[in-house]
Image 1 (cartoon, rainbow, N blue to C red):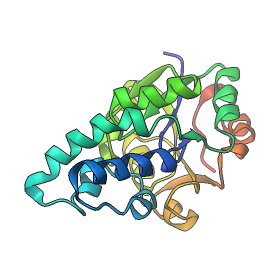
Image 2 (cartoon, rainbow, N blue to C red):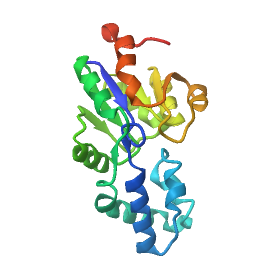
Image 3 (cartoon, one colour):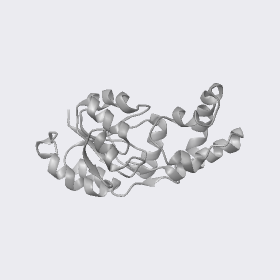
Image 4 (cartoon, rainbow, N blue to C red):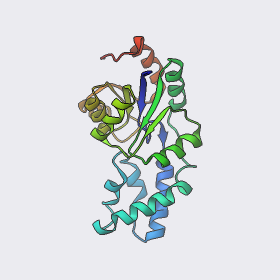
Length: 208
């Protein structure tokens, strides 16, 4: 199997905050239950249910999840944009002869809408996974390095036994990413191609 670089989606490859905020506002309009969209998008990373439990009674959370996901394609896809350096980072992976694997807590079908809308290339996509739950997909798809913005992504990399590359484009600062086990921390993906040149010699993981 050709080695791969794994990437998280939200706030790693794409800035989905404008679209997700729009989807939360649509959810408020549909249900009458206030969701502070700006607060919610400031802490992206954990699964949707985790956030909705902050706003909905426990007995209404599953219905809210279904409603939100129904609203998502019409509200969240168009406003979302690639993060700084994401396009170049994916191109660098392909130029190095490696595969791109996206592993995200977002459902596959919704993640695919984002990737396809933005024309971001990928070879495999695994969704609805978080923290340690991502590790099995990283191993299955031959991921050698995993790039993410959340401490849970570094937990996923550590659990899979691969170096985690943290980016501070999401809610977690550099110190938290390092404390969670990040081998490298970047301010954003613009520095990733140079790092890949350094670590991908022989397509094997390297400690830094």
